[in-house]
Image 1 (cartoon, helix red, strand yellow):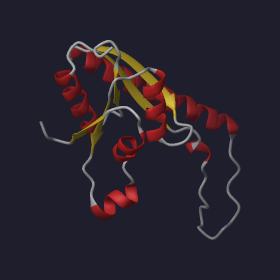
Image 2 (cartoon, helix red, strand yellow; image 1 turned 45 degrees about the vertical axis):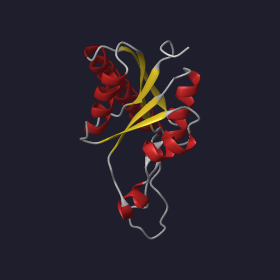
Image 3 (cartoon, one colour; image 1 turned 90 degrees about the vertical axis):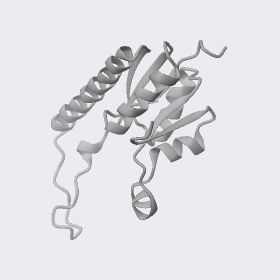
Image 4 (spheres, helix red, strand yellow; image 1 turned 60 degrees about the vertical axis):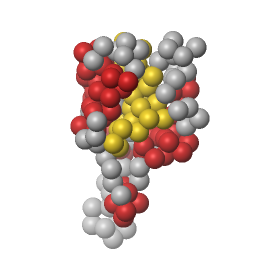
Length: 159
């Protein structure tokens, strides 16, 4: 039933995500909100070719990889908690969720929304256009096109 299901705000701590959270609080006062932060595991294992000539990569220290993964997970949890605190201050009923991305961020956000039966997904947009958007991709655009739930894209700096 509308009003009972939570909303979901994709939250990475950026000014755009903060603004999206503020708008969600204004549009959906008092609602439960999933504050979802997605982090990407495996980055510590991605060792580039230092010389750029196809030389063998430096061996990976698995203990260091595990340490970096734990730091990234903890950082994501802290970002979700910070977003939850902001949501609470805005009158929402927050539930922080930090999750590792197993495919791509947009798919993970969509899965979280499905798992929590979110009524709407709220995402911030940095407003990239043209070549920059094509090179960087757009998480908000991907969520908009692939999520089966209503999606609210909040443009940066616009009320």
